[in-house]
Amino acid sequence: MANPDRNDLIEYLLRLGDTAMIQGQRLSQWIGHAPALEEELALANVGLDLIGQARNWLDYAAELLNDGRDADRLVFLRQEREYRNLLLVEQPNGDFAVTMLKQFLYDAWHFQVLLGLSASSDERVSGIAAKALKEVTYHLRRSAEWVERLGDGTEHSHARMLKAIDQLWRFTVELTETCEAEQRLRVSGVLGNQADVIAAWQSKVADVFASATLPLPAAASPFYLSARKGLHTEHLGLLLAEMQYLPRAYPDATW
Image 1 (cartoon, rainbow, N blue to C red):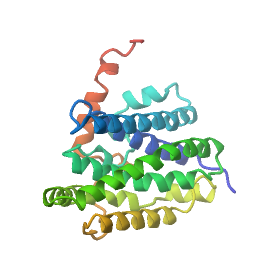
Image 2 (image 1 turned 90 degrees about the vertical axis):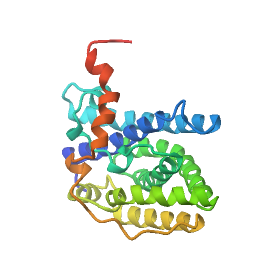
Image 3 (image 1 turned 45 degrees about the horizontal axis):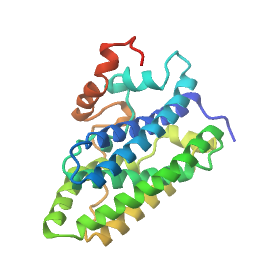
Image 4 (image 1 turned 60 degrees about the vertical axis):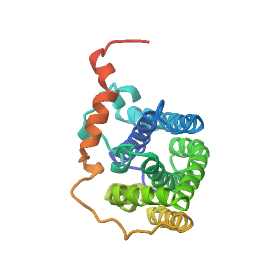
């Protein structure tokens, strides 16, 4: 197998790390606002898992960049256009239905991505993925159960889930796309077959939606925004302004 292109690998690591970081940050916003104490603890724990995974991916990206930045600087000192996270995870939490649907759509994709990366030719990638997969297996089971519970629950909860699908589905287009860089990483053995990841994600979503008595929309279509190009929704800039305020205001602070 050919050696992977360094820039391709950096971009992919940023995509994984940024996505986990932003979703973890979104989940942390539920602290003090969740509908029940048990759910507050569960959301916080999932968020912490993702932030820990983000550090692992971004540590590796920082080493490859070798420009003096570490994971903290990549998170707190990059501009919005430099972030590569999925558009899906930067969307606001909304109500509990929106949060759990967003988590499920991400988890179903994340699980398949990590499953493939666990067999990566890059030992650093396979090691991080194998460790993260243990956590994401639980994340997926939990979010899928919530989608089924809310979708096949009361008339009110079902209606809230329908509204959540309308709000979030268009952002799933990024979960079913590949790019030339990923194709090159596949050739070098870093990634597996991305078509298999997409097919498995589609199958899992279809099964859970069926159990939840929710209609499965047609495949989302591409539109002008693209996280791979740094073209995000307006929500990411607002989130970063809050998330990055302290390290930008006090850049030399130590703890």
